[in-house]
Image (cartoon, one colour):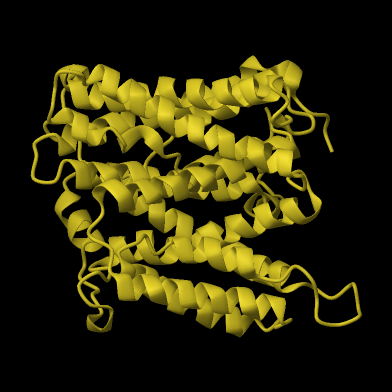
Length: 401
């Protein structure tokens, strides 16, 4: 009779401290949201995520409910943590040269242009559907990055840094698309405030200010200014992260830098609170009234193909082309098979894609079909990318550390 071994406390702690632990919690929270949205508790779930939380001091543009506060508020911390990791790689890691930084930026551009063209090709002849051309252009960093962290040694450190940078560039470019093509008119006083606060953060870095509260206050002020200007407020995390100092104020080299202290303080909170809340509230899409034939309609088919075909073709294609033309170089220990698997994962497009779908098809019957295209395309991209990296490219696996 075989013995049943109970995991020890040490094993549990090790799992919770690992990237796989964080990814597992995010997945469970996301599945819980999906189940609740399609169960007898759907009404309660909808009431919960739309609980009013509007602050009058923020005006009409401020978040109105819990869901908006998580997506526009707490997710600022996620982008801050990710940009800090990228900055570490830029300072002394796999992105320390101009050519290595150029690679994810070029990939992000290809990963926007090709999906948009794919969508327009599918929806040609459907004028109403063509308004959603930008729906499949963004990669959801919140779901993509935990997956590659959970893959561990199946993804090289250089490839991980490349994808983190690409996902951030992709999201920032997606926010720019929203501001230019779908956003409300920019409020110039707010835009001027953004410039002033950003300049103050850069100045604080230049003159040697190392106290974290200074940058914390700056981040909050920048978040409010971006909101007032009509831009996506999560950009505050990206800008603040870029401005945080990477050196200490003292002579002791062993002293933690402001960047390291911020990363250490925020990473557990982002991993165990922010991302699970985000997944719980954003993946809860109601499937009521959805039928398989709906996926053959122009808008959902265009979104789905844009994510599962356009994304990997655009990212992998322009990345390989740029390396062949000697414009950029591949990350260390990153064969083409691994790069292709990561390009498949880039088809995960929940956050910005859902946001653009709501703006592009506001008041239209195409909102739900477009969201189904996002959901199906993102799930298929996640499965294909995971299977490719986990099983189909075993020869690309890195040695155990």
